[in-house]
Image (cartoon, rainbow, N blue to C red; front, side, top):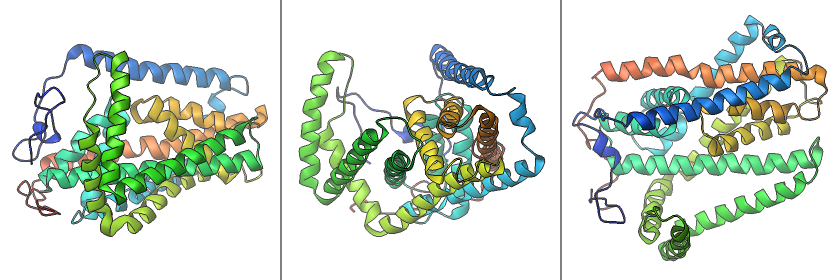
Length: 379
């Protein structure tokens, strides 16, 4: 693999820099001040969000009543749905990375999910763990990078498409705030524009280089304001991004789309079941509103990252699902949100801990680094 440098010519860190010969991550000291600040920032946001949520719920009924509405039968059913929801996350990775077995996808996905749900900056740390696991099973770094890029782009496109469609549906069918239809139209235009640009990048290397040149010009203007900013050379990065996407998508785009949509819809289904368990039927909270609530959580978690979306997700879900409902139903909304978070936030943590410990202790899946190269070096 060619050496990677930063714009000033110094060596850049790559995922391989943190991985030893066995594919396991190397121990690396991290600044204690940065760790403390990151933890305080992440969990500070969590505490503020949860305090805000519970203060709002006091106007409806005692917050403890929400827990009283949850029966052990509901907890068992929603936990099983949470496990099934985890299962639906694995096929897209198997499709995007040829040769990856379903059980390997299960281990890396559940362990990464548990890490991102519990650790500040968990998303970045989980990505490093994902690379380390796949490297330890013999996959080449560039193949893993292609898989991460493809699944990441497809996942975000699917989520934002769901957000645009559900926003338009809720603005039409209601209940909805004023001017929501304008925001829905704007988001639909942005999603279509993003899809067109992505399609043009995948179709033409010349367009990718041209877009990279335009992006560089815009970044140079930003750098005049943010002096310490060191943007990458997009005339190089966009064609590289295109090559990695085209190489993976050439044979799997349709199956990847189907499995990715199924994964997102399953998560929405879990939220819907949690609502229905609390007596919130279609006439009270429609499936479009449930889809919008899930999609808003995705957007909010990108803007305000906390471990597993903790705090932020609960506030957004209660706000969207409870919009326009009387005070008497707000406690049921909170109970439904707690059930959903049990399935999608808490259930993955112990499962991921077990799969992580298995990976660390078991060597029977280990393979020499680069022994499972998906694409030839000159592809």
